[in-house]
Image (cartoon, rainbow, N blue to C red):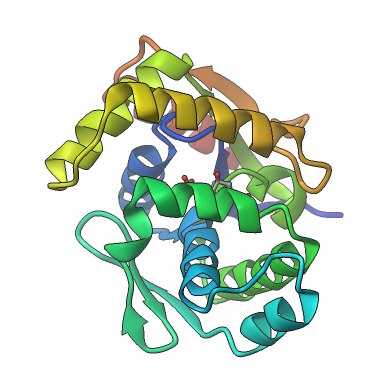
Length: 225
Ligand code: DC
């Protein structure tokens, strides 16, 4: 299968800096930023609002069949439109992060969102961010990155980010959630969080954003050359 230079994937655990770097890299290269985590969060929100039991495949299937999801570029995070309603803010809570992680273990959800992500990427060049974009969704992407950072540093960054967005955030709670999410995302059978064999692993614990971005840009241009 030939490699695709129109898709760049960035995977890694929550709080590793994926979103910031994906946005910056996409802006730098003129690609569209595809935030796959936002899509799992939107499904999580819908499951919660409709009080769907995750063991009830029929109701879940109905929800997924009627799912209309749009990601629009925003100043920061993508603007997420779920069945005509702007849910950009509602999906960003810590609770929705946990809900997203729960729904992401369901094969019905993964199949539907993977198909949607491929459709979105068919419209133009993308930087796709998530947990399985390099392994499952776009295995033939030419440039793949996997970001890592110590859980404590990720919890510190996430706490700060939520507070800046005006949400209440407790470091210890967030650290516990991050550890649980890491274990759930890495331990699930379906599309677990793991680096693709051909991904460049970057440990961001001590690197700042510009340093990681420069590393990514040099890798992208080396791959193009
Ligand atoms: O990146 P995020 O925090 O917005 O992701 C929320 C959850 O969604 C994450 O814990 C696991 C799930 N997810 C996934 O399983 N696959 C993806 N490609 C993206 C996110």
